[in-house]
Length: 107
Image (cartoon, rainbow, N blue to C red; front, side, top):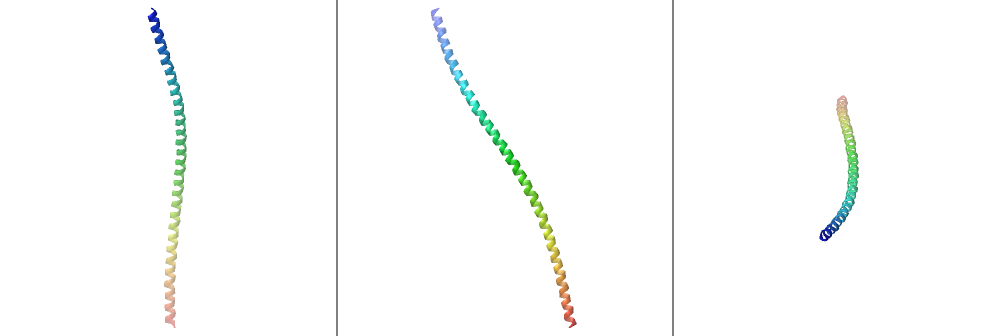
C-alpha cells in the first residue's frame, strides 16, 4: 500500500509538472495571439489606407481623363478655326490677285 501511495504521489507530482508546463504554454499562446491580433489590426488599417489611396487615384484618373477629353475638344475647335482662317485667307488672296490683275489690265 505504501508503494502504491508513493507511486500515486509521484504521478501527482508528474501531473503537476505537466499542468505547470501546459499553463506556461497557454500563457505563451495567449501572448502570441495578442501579438498576432495587433498585427492583424495593423494590416487591416494598412489595407484600409491602401483602399483610400486607390480610390483617390481612381478619382484622379477620372479627372485627368475628363480634362484630356475637354482639351481634345478644344484642339478640334481650334483646328476648325485655323482651317476657316486658312480658307478665308485663300479667298482673300485670290480676290487680291484678281483685283491686281484687273488693275493691271486697266492701266
